[in-house]
Image 1: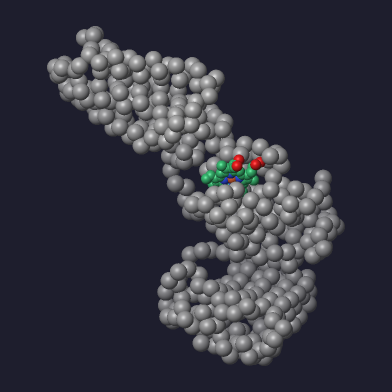
Image 2: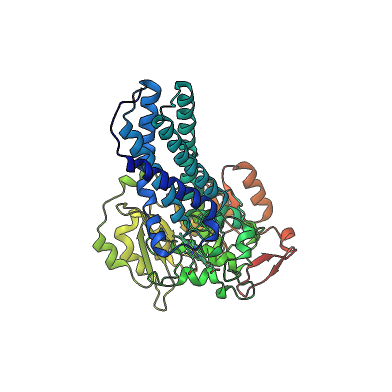
Length: 483
Ligand code: HEC
């Protein structure tokens, strides 16, 4: 039985009034234009929605277990459920287009409020038949659960309550990924679709699938196929952060530089959903960006690297030498040396003190001399080495035999021959090698591949496939022919 509490009559009128107003919202919501103050009231929805959930769940629990529910609890729960539902309609005024999730969330949220009112009425009129009330409590509990679940999906995305999947999505990029599906869409999923999905469709733009991306938003197509630099999507991500049109808006997780580059190269290459990594020439920027994503991110031995001071790195960094830590506190370094007009091998004497810290080293396109080669040999913790487009030879590679931690070697467009294959065998941790445009013969390479199936060998585009491509851009980028 309900505990007797004196509730003033106006409380009943309030509940009645709010109920009528909620019915009004449900029926006329789509046909009326609410003023902006109302939209502001809607902002309270995410805050107050916690009250009816907690209060009603407590009331249901007491009802099912003890049958003694303080009437005041029921009154406050009912009023808060009504206010929450009404504020929800006000919040939705801001949504440019309602998706199914939002519509269901609104219906279920209203149902919670109506069921609470019904419960209150039954109790007030002393019509509370035990069995009827029990059924109502159970139905109400289930409705609260689904209303909350749909609400969660509206704000957090559809798999909000899904169990976390194993591993990180971005880690499982296949060996020969589709650029759109495996690389581009996951970036959009990560940084954009929270505002550009079926339920929150900001700027009338959906970024959830290829068709919608092609379709564009309220201002038309966002990708310009004739002049990729003119694409709205690229213009908006390149705007300064303070600009109100910058995407993603300030305060939201931003695209990294390489994510922007990936987006840009994908659009430059025709923004289609059939392009695959193997369709690209190995000197296309996108290839390097994708390869970096494919590396395993978990590193084991970096904690044992020697300490290195920020000051040291600052002094060594220049326009021609780029040194970065892999993470804030990490002593593992990524070093890229660019061709400077004044380039000479002596740069490597300066880098000597950090040799043991270098885990990734990019010396591509440099005129590598003896000094450079003996420097590389000192980088005993090196896992990733790029010497593409250099005069790198078999003798050079022979000198690097001691680099047992090497996992990736990029040596395309160099002078190495079949002799180097024997040296590659020595690198016990080697996972990937890029040897396109070298003097290695196809027969020797085939034999090598057969014997070392754990090493992935990239020898460039298979000539028989190459005829299917046309050169679309100046920089000899191979792109699949339009179907
Ligand atoms: C926090 C929410 C939010 C996020 C995250 C977000 N956007 Fe937007 N986006 C908006 C809003 C709001 C508009 C509409 C701006 C306007 O109409 O003035 C918009 C508009 C756009 C438009 C213009 C559509 C048109 O036709 O006018 C593009 C393109 C766009 N966003 C791309 C992106 C990309 C790419 C990302 C991810 C890198 C992203 N957005 C992330 C909120 C967001």
